[in-house]
Length: 353
Length: 239
Image (cartoon, each protein chain N blue to C red):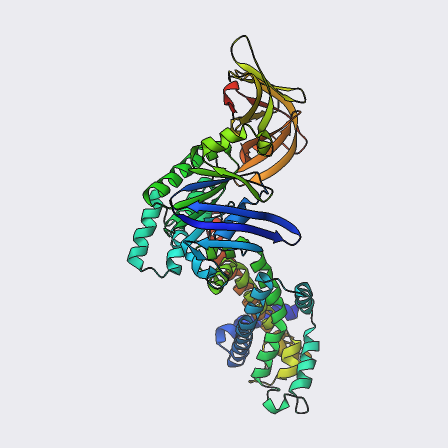
């Protein structure tokens, strides 16, 4: 496989803060590469460097064998495009949004219409051309942003947390589109994510990034296999816990993750283990409710952050759990920082790494 | 009270009758202030783009200066310009004093700080990532700046209208450098002032009402243009 882009010893600083440190990475043509790491690990900065929007403080970038310099970086931008984490649409129609890049490239009207229609079909938004882009739902807006990038058919597509702010249904649609773009258009895709399920299922390779450093690169099988022996690497990813599993009489196991938190799981495992629970699999309730879920913990909301259409909560039950709920649910339940809540999740939602 | 009622009655009479003196004053007001606003837009917009999009040393001082200058007394600016444009002044050779050109120049300078401040805020309110977004979609630096400007258009139009309103409503500059010469440099504000001084309160009130109608009328059009649904809502209000 030929590398489409090569980063060598890239370092970038914002003032006195180093956000990327000696990052070295090869991106193979036609692959989907995931940058997996927690918030603040340098994923966005790395994507912006690959989008030629940011000139690194030091290091080298090569694109298709050619060194990227100040002189040619603007020209290089035509070969890649980036979709930002916060969906950003222009204050105009869906059509004009998707057509923006084509207009910059001075594509003729007929071809432009055809390309925009095709792109909207790819993201399952046929018929949305005349609608006001900013009045669409969060999921629809993200699809418009994706269509706007896909329509350009650049060699490299950079996606910053493409499904972070979406409900599971829209997230699934976006993931399908990403896979289709890679398969049908042979687009090389680099996507930043902190979602381990996504990192396992979609990319050909994963690059682990934390505190600005790329620590490991490999296939999902290599990375997750390796990391089960290097448990600390996962410590900073949401809802990942290391603990000790004990098999029960029923053949399932209880995993003690410390601070009095014992999780019921259907894993048939014993001994040291790393487990992960998808934030979207956890339910938040204000009162203890009777249900079939085996895991119910009482805790306090210690962090609230806005994620577009949803709200991300950190709930400390002895260990911090990251939970994602819709803004409507957050409002209707009258939740706030410091509120006492219960988290509920099934034994089957626990995954071993 | 009688003067006000007489003024209202006279205003309608003057408007309906097409009185050439009044219409001349109105036209000159609209023309001088309109040209002044357009002139101010030409230099205020690039300044606002620089302040809104770029970071540089002393930026906050420059922004603060423009904000402070919004409050510049019109008569003070008028006096300064009078000294500059008078025969003894450095630009006296231009022969601008007591001409429409002086009023236009003076009003353009007067409204610049206001336009710059509002337009800068509008540009700064645009998500800073829009520039990067435009570039990653293929825009050059200048194309990306224009894209940001388009996203801030609503605020920029508001700054232009605010500038025009300030220009057409001011007295000090027009009086000092225009001289209120009948049929030549008299505008709504200066004419209102001179009719009042003469004791012709009715005409003064009439001219003030016309000025108010112009200012409110333009503002209303802009507000409705920014939010056309308002018309629909107003028409559906219970009778």
